Image (cartoon, rainbow, N blue to C red):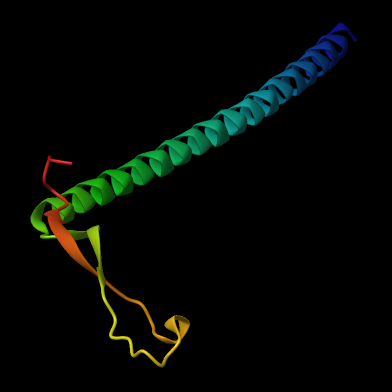
Length: 114
């Protein structure tokens, strides 16, 4: 009798302990999943930011080298000269087109002088 009660008590206690351990293990696994997802998301975001910054740096260096090594020229019209038109006495002045010409000043884009 007492032997059966002791076995039954031990069995009940063992089942309670097993349930408690299973619950704790389930909570631990859920927390571990959340931590893993958070770490994975953070690492992915950091990698995307680093790759974007690398592309921006490469684009900046490439743009800088292209501007530095190119011979871009800038044409700035400075003096507009009116060329007189040939007019006949019998024609109205508005019939004759007015021809304009300009002499551009050519400057390099890399020069420091304005």
